[in-house]
Each structure stands twice: as C-alpha cells, then as structure tokens.
Image 1 (cartoon, one colour):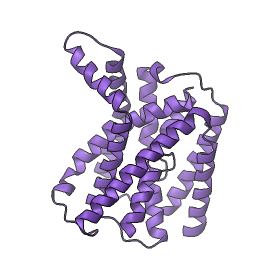
Image 2: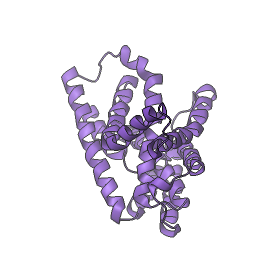
Image 3: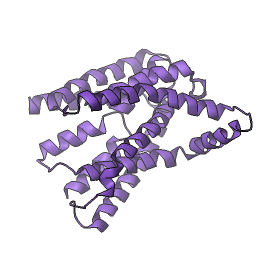
Image 4: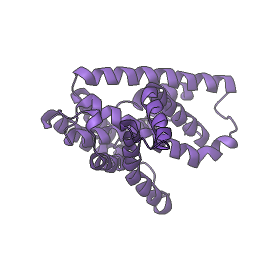
Length: 262
C-alpha cells in the first residue's frame, strides 16, 4: 500500500510547482513509510519523464527532424529551440556534478524543505503577480534559456521545486505563464535522461522488494496516468489562471512542515 500512495503522490506533484521530492520525503516521514528502493525511485522518475515526452511529442518530433535537416545545411527554428534547451541544461549539469562529488552525503532535512517551500512559494506569488507576461515561448533567446537554466539549478536544493524555480525565472523575464511552463517542461527532458543514464545500473540489478512485479507495473501505470492527467490540467490552468493557488499551497505546506517537524 505504501507504493500505491507514493505512486499517486509522484503522479500529482511532479507536474505542479510544489516539489515532488519534498512531498515524497515528508509524506514518508509523516506516515512512517519505509524508504523506496533506489530502483523504484528511478522507475518512477523514468515514468514521469515519459509523460513529458508524450505530452510534448510534437515539439520532440520537430526538434529531432530539425537536427537531421542541419545535415542538409538548414538551421530551422526547432533546431535552435533544441539548442536553447541544451544551453539551459548546462548550469544544472555543472552544479549537479559538484553536488555529487562534494556533497554526496547531503540529505534532505524537513526544516530546510519547510523554509525553501515558504521562500519560493512567496517568490512565486510575488513574481507572478507583478511581472509582465507579454513574451511567448518562441521568443526565448539563448541568454534567457541560460538564465532559466540557472533557476533550474536551484532545484538541487530540497524543497525548491524544479518547475517552481524555472517558472519564477521565466516570469521574471516576462514570459506568459503557459509559455514559461512549456519551456520549463522541455528543459526537464535532458535532465531526466541524464539522471536515468547515471542511475540505470540500479535497474539492471533490480530485485523487486516492493511486492509482486505485476503490482509494481500497475503502480507505474497509475503514476503515468495520473501524471499525464495532472500535466494536461496544469497546462490548461495556466492558459487562464494565475499561479497564486500553487504559491499559497507551498507556503501552507512549508508552515506545516516547520510546525510538525521542528
């Protein structure tokens, strides 16, 4: 049953700006769940990555096709879009390397999660309320992509949220909410692929300790289904609604964490 609830939690929180890893950590501590195996964490993250790839399949196909067109001497807009995503990935790759090399002992702390949730929830609320929203997805420059990549790097701190930090960065730069989220989720693809490659060995030696394999596969399918529905809902929400409710939730969540675990 623990895997059932954690699968639902992953499917919901991965695609809204609230930090899925922080919720999984706090949820497990609150209900005294046993930590998931590394292989299950990799499996769930791979499933959520596949949700993004499927949802933005048109963008993926355009960028793949544009890469082959370069061989014919044609540099199209989708090719530059792919290069901007690569540029946005550079900061988190560098920061992730140093985190792995020098702070591998670093673990999530409830207090830090609570503080970061409140701080970035407040930033998200203020930025979304007062920043302009006149720039569109296809107007993203290489410099803006790099800046958003620096905000993505902040998500290495527990409780920050990758989508939350990149949305803050994009809104500061003046991008409309839905356009900001569009690029934010595309930025997650190379990061997710890199994380999968680095942890794939955990799946090679995967010995299922979470229950029967059929049950585990069902939970992964549940995560995928809920994740796709959540991503679809969130993208439609951003077309007409502000980020206030998600920012407010983050602040309330952070206050609860500090009160309960301090």
